[in-house]
Each structure stands twice: as structure tokens, then as C-alpha cells.
Length: 124
Image (cartoon, rainbow, N blue to C red):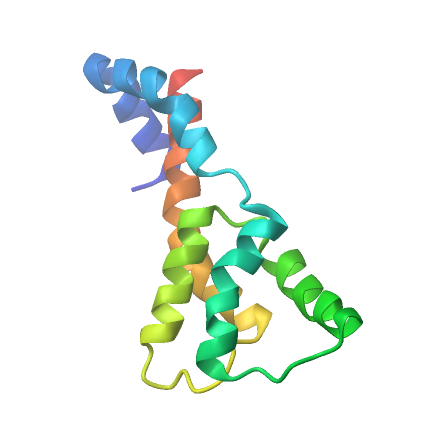
């Protein structure tokens, strides 16, 4: 459904609009960027699963830096679901590269961000 049409329909439904106004702060928090600590926390179990070789402290900082910069702006739920998708994929034999993993996560982030955008516009 086109963005503005969805917003217009939400604005016409007083019950939906009241619920949007009540839950908008929670939706905004749910869509916030997860940040570097969450990225590392979600991806660390995959280091063991996929057998990433041990590195020096400086190499680990660089390694995680690529992932935190690429994935840190995602909502936490989208990151978790994208990682679940990757792990469940039949061809996931190696630790994922940041770009392809971000693409998998974005498939989950887009509907979340769309809902937030529509809700903000309807509530305004």
C-alpha cells in the first residue's frame, strides 16, 4: 500500500490513531539503532559456530569495527532475525561478511521502519 494512503487510512480510524499515539514511544525505542555492543553480543556466538580463527587484540578491534559500523544502525530485532536467517540458510558455511549480513537484516528492518514512519506521520 502506498505510504500516504496507509497514513490517510490510519488517520481516519480513531481507534487505530489512539493506539498509535499510545504505543509510538515504544515503537520508536524498538526501532532505535542497536549500537556496537549489541552487534558484538549477537554475532559473538557465531564466531564459535563458524570457527573464526583467533586474532590479536588489534585484529579483533578491526574485525568487530567492520561489523559495528555496518550493522550498528539496525534495530536489534532486525539484527537478531537476520542472524537467525543466516544461520538457518543451507549455504551458511562461513562467518558472514558485513554487507550480505546487513542485507539479510534489512529485510526485517524495512517493515519496522515503515511502520514507524507511517505511525509518526499519522500521529502528527
